Length: 212
Image 1 (tube, rainbow, N blue to C red):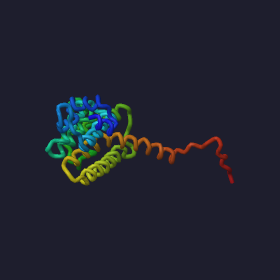
Image 2 (spheres, helix red, strand yellow):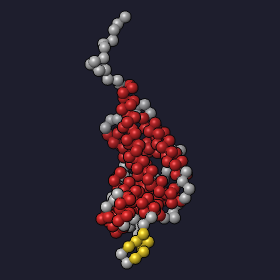
Image 3 (cartoon, rainbow, N blue to C red):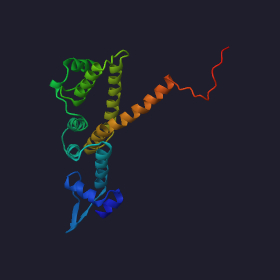
Image 4 (tube, helix red, strand yellow):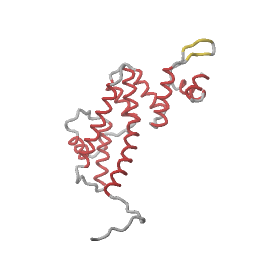
């Protein structure tokens, strides 16, 4: 374990905690007080740190996500586990039916279950937009839906590039949990870029425009 700690950069106490919480599989016992750890343990440690530190998951939620990676259940199950891990629980009955209907119109050609956490979260946002008087004058919502579909296709293309079921499931959960953070960061950068193009700030040092 000392060598695993040195190689991974993770303290021994933290590794022991991950073992106790069943986030990390036990090593192969080689003696009374010694176990052997391999590359799969290093890979799993990187996954755990990514889920906890970048993805912001709790230990219990991360355990459920990792269990989905290790299971033999269909990939759709792994997607569901990962999606619920990063989503706030929303009861359909707590939502404005008009907001739900609005989301369903946006995604009417998609194969989405009624309890999909994304569908419910999007309806909650639509409901809040309406409360705040934010109208959809420029196809705002449908353009978001189109962008989401492009991102989903990129996610599934990345999953398809993996050779084994375990690698595919790992990419599913990593892409779902960390992909939200990636897309949020890129969206902020893109907003600054487009805002700068459309609303350039003129420096006081810039020469004043001349009239001919």
